Structure formats: structure tokens, C-alpha cells
Length: 530
Ligand code: NG1
Ligand code: ZN
Image (cartoon, rainbow, N blue to C red):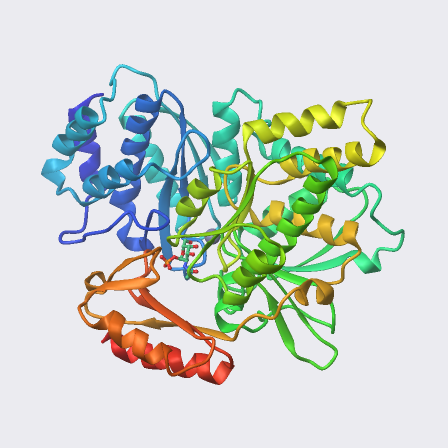
């Protein structure tokens, strides 16, 4: 590495003085105009990480569901996972270093992480459709090339597609081909195989309306549609030609406002879903015949998937263990239903998919979803091998082998590297078709407890610290007692606060037996935060 060249180049991507940023829940995120230096430096860091792991590393330029003016960047580790926590710290140090210290911090990281600087480096880059993303990804490339790394720029990609590419490249193609065609082929083949028996001849019953949040999901879903000769009929809305990214639409909007997005025509009982801005989240919803809006969030998605997988496991008769992983935002009714009715073990982790993903890896089949629709299912190598063997076992009775074949296709249909709106959508559509379930029947599995999420602006959100998977506040003193006393006033109630990792706010969550109570509890708790 030519450190002098790096210093020279770094000056062209100067850090605005006084700006301090944190590698948060999903990398760095802030107004796009403040991110040029971060992008350049993440290019540098990706090269170091690649040298250290002797693997391809990914860099994704996106700010997901944030407003169009924002942007962000995150690094993807060798198996398509989020960056390791110790490297998040390195990322924060490097992003915040003053210009004259960049060299020193780079050397510091190399030393601490025992990076062999002679090693080759390879980085792949993807970006979302934000107006700022192209230029910012160019700054990442600058950082990579000046530090002697090689790269492949995929250009426009969904976040989960980039995770997939990284995973494929580091497993010598075993997981799939590291191209968008490879991704579409893998998913569409698994979907077609899985749903072979399910589809009726008319297209009408299979219609799905998709709100693409005016983002990358529109482009990629349109490409994907070409790979289906039959089966699902998808109609795209909010494709980015007129509307603004994430503005009054998208999964985050629908989930947090508990109402439909603008720009989609919904008829009663029609199945609709929304992606977020980088297509790693999905939320379903519909209007009933009386005009009431029904939201089907990540918790209900996890429930549908868990019950389907559990049934298949019973049929193949293998004792593979299943675990469902949620966060504190999971609706209390979902946790109760999973534990008490379905009898599957449920675990709660801190917010952010990296925590859920990590926990889900402990099971043969780890199902994880955030309430906001971000999640996937992970299969252990043992589970995958057992399932593959059974699918091939000629002597097995038909029913068992069919179940094993379904599981085999399900493994291929889920993105094993990250939560993925396109892949999750196909899994859900397949399950609904195979089970002959309508969206209303799915919705009726359990009734959500009314809930409310609020954002509170405070001078310094870091004064709030939490424990017990963020369900209890440790500081400031007295806050948890205040929340406990408020919660006691309502029936079936629960509330917690935590500083957001992606926005400069504190999030308040409350649920209770009625919407009025949930709203009032959330409001009272937000007053206690000041
Ligand atoms: P923060 O801002 O830390 O709450 C939000 C979501 C997370 C996760 C990240 C990354 C909620 C309550 N929080 O994190 O679940 O998806 O963004 O996108 O939905
Ligand atoms: Zn996202």
C-alpha cells in the first residue's frame, strides 16, 4: 500500500471538520452531502478487510428506508454477513479520523487486526437508486484503487443481491452464480419447482400488487419477472418514474403509519405488499370488505413460514431443531402464538438484523424476522445435507420424499446471506399457494395487540442505555421505574425505549389492549424520556 498516495487522494475526499459519525445498526447513515470522505475511507477499509480475510468483501451504498436526501454505506463480510463488530469499531475510527491521522489509523487497524498488507484484495460494490449513490460509489472505488485493491462494480443492486454476490464469490460458486442472472435463475427455479402442484390455471387468484417504494426493488423485480413463465402475476407500483424514494410509500411507511402507501390501487381483499428503498424488507396488507386496513408484518410472516416449515419437518420425521428469533418490537400476540400455540421456541435479540442473524445460526432451522419485515431463514449445513439426502432417497415413501423436496427448494428460495424482499415474497407466495390460503386466512392466525411507535428528539440520545435485549433502560436513572409505573396503568401492556442506531432520535414502543391505550402509553412514555 502506497500510504503517501492514499494521503494525497484522501485530501480530495476531505472530511468536513467536526463531523463525527458512528457505524450504526446498518453502517453509516446521514445526509448524502456529508458522506464523501466516509465512502472513500470505506473503500480503504474494505481493502484491509479483504486482505485480512483473504476473501471478497462487499460495499453497499444505500440508506434503505431513509429519505432520498440521505445516503449510507455498509460493508459485507465474506459469507454475506454484516461486518464483524470489531471491524465496526475500526470503521468508526477511520471515518472520524482527521485528515492528518488517516495514515496512522490505517496502520493502527492493520496492526491490531494482523492484516498482511502484501495480500491481494478484492471488493464488490452495489448501490441503490438515490441520486447521490453513483457519485458516492465512485468515491468508494477511489479508496479501493488507491490502496491497490481490485474491484467489481455491480452498479444498481438491491442490498440482499449484493450480500448474495459476496456469498457466491467466497464459496466458489457453490451457493450460486455471482451475477444478477444467477440470482434470478436460482430463485425462479426454486419457486417454479416448489409451486409445481399449486397453481390454478386462471391468473386472477395469483395477482400480487407490489409497492416498490420508488426504489431499486422496481428495477430488479421487473428483471426477475422475465424468469417466470407461469404462476405468479405481479403488478408493480411506485416504480420511481414519478414519485420520490420512500416518500409516502414503502415498507417502513406502511408499517410505521399503519396505512397503505400512496400510489397503489387496492381493491377489497386484494393481496398487496411493500418493499423498502433497498428491497431488504417486505410488509403485506389488504383492505377487507368493510374497508378496514389490515397490516401483515414481519411477525406474521415469521409465523406463516414457521408453521409451514414445522409441518414439513413433521412429514420428513427428522429431529431438526427450529428456533424463531425476534426483537423487542415483535408484537406480543405473535410471541404468544409461536410459543403457546405452535410450540416453537422464541428468542429475543437486540434490534438490527446482524443480531438476529447471529442467533438464528444456532439452530438447524433459524427463522428470524424483525417486525418491520426484515428477515430470512437460515439452514445449518447438517439440516441441508439431511434434507438433500432424503430428497434423493428412492426407497422413501412418496409423501416424505415430496416434503423433503419442498424443503430442498425452500432452502434455495431463501436468501441465506440476508433478509431479502424478493426472495421472502416468493416464499410467502409459494406457501399461500401450496396451502390454498387467502390473505385473510393468513391474517387470522392471531390478532395483533394494538401498538404505537413514536420518535422522540432529544439533545443526546446516547444518555439512554439498555439491557435485556433493549427491553429495559439502565440509564438515565429513574427512567425504567417511570416506564414500569406507566405500564401498570394499562391492560396487556408493554413499553420500552431505545436510542435509534440509524437516526438521531429515541424510539418509543408501546402496546396495550386497545389502540387508544397503546397511543396514550406511548405518549406518556415519550414524555418520561425528556
Ligand atoms: P434503528 O433506527 O436502530 O431502530 C432501524 C430498524 C431496525 C433495522 C435498522 C436497519 C425499527 C424499530 N428499527 O433501526 O429494525 O431494520 O433500521 O435498517 O424498525
Ligand atoms: Zn432496507
